[in-house]
Length: 81
Image (tube, rainbow, N blue to C red):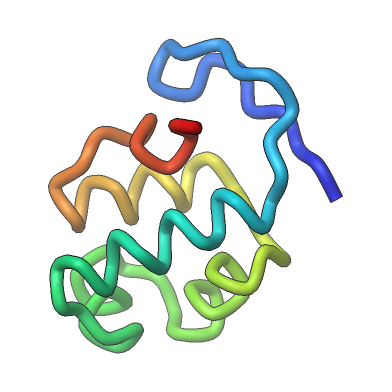
C-alpha cells in the first residue's frame, strides 16, 4: 500500500510506503523511550490508533503531526528517506 501526503508540514512528497512511515514512527517512539501507552497519553491518541499507525494500517497526516509534536520532532521526520 502506498500513500501520498501533500502539504504535510509544507513538504511535497512522492508516494510513501505506509510500512516505511510506520517503522519511522516506531523507531522515533522507541528512541525517546516511550511505550505505546506513554505516547498515547502524550499525544492524545488511543493505544489502538498508535498500534494501527505503527503497523502501517493508518497513516493519517493529522495523527502523524500529533505524534511528532509529542516526540518533539518535525512532522517531516517520518517522511525522510
